Image (cartoon, rainbow over all chains, first blue to last red; front, side, top):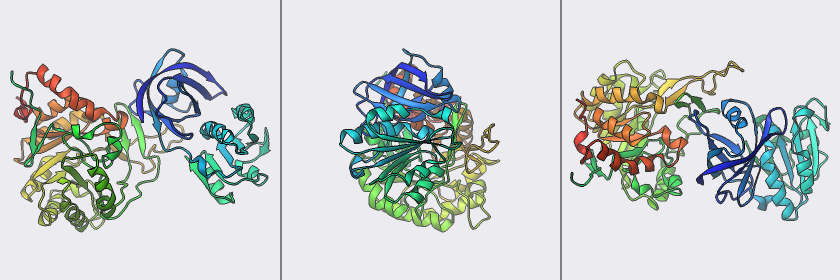
Length: 204
Length: 305
């Protein structure tokens, strides 16, 4: 874990409520997909924990949903502004358990940490399936980004406005997988735990 | 002016400085040792330990407040046997000072059992007994809300231990001085205060309490003035040493607590938002002492005019 000052490079909206922020700083403490950062914001007592979507030697990318005071403050920030960030928190996902064809299941704002995971699994020669679950078509983000990595992508929406109508578990039956990785709301994790035919790893 | 001296003596054990990360904000220490050498601290009070392992409360357990936070973690800990078998040996690899063992219980027997087990551990310097837990055999009332119950816990722990026993008091009472006095009379070697203040937040959208447990302990800079007031009241009423805590986040706060009557000072919520907070306070202390003309920190204890 490291405490450092990061400078915002870009901060743009992906949907009505989900933002993508790229920040520049010392990323050396980040070592695995699924880790998170804890961001200090002026005027707020507690830091805000946000999962890491992607990283390289100098930048961190986070995708976050604006839900309260903290994320609203973040959404107002622009390039050149700085943030006090604790980076490299959490253990992250264990890639060694994936088998040859893992499935990655993300629900809403649980999708972001799966991006770097998919990238690393594909780089390791795995056949990666990704299921992205949203409430409605307007909330979908990163579908094309996952596809560009070389993953087989399925989208589900609760209202059926796009892809398979229902939840990520409704897409699972059609996929042949050796292990699952997931991130999303607790009811989704419980449903996956009941439905999945292999073992897997979850993050809240 | 002579050389700056930050040493204080707490119940017969000398600390290099009075700064002590508070229980529940510093784990069992070794996690923080990955960030800095924790031997720079006076000591620290480890995670509240109970007789049996506890999973704690359902989430959410934390709520944001102005200049503070509410928590209802629910004394999640691996239980005293695993603390002795696993946590303390791991701590021994990175911390070479006596540690403060924080103990909670849900009956007088629980407290006595857990304290007796920890008393025989050579790493333990003091036992800090948290009497803010509900008494399951006494209708759920917290031990710390009645002088008689607090004294009963104190007596039971003192009977089975040899090390200094510090009773950690709850501020959620009408007369904290009476409770402190009862603990002193029952044989306590020190008093620490204040534990968190009972608080609550409500989510305007869902109209539900933010915390799953509805209520929780309010801590952080916002409660500092209440803590200073209670430390002042208790320190002037008892003869045993007082450990002050509640919203301490700077070296200036440490000095203010000591002027109010604290022999040593615990740092709580500040560790949760800045993992280097306690280290920073230790490092800032000499310069702040100099600024206020203090050479020997121990001299200012209770020095409020």
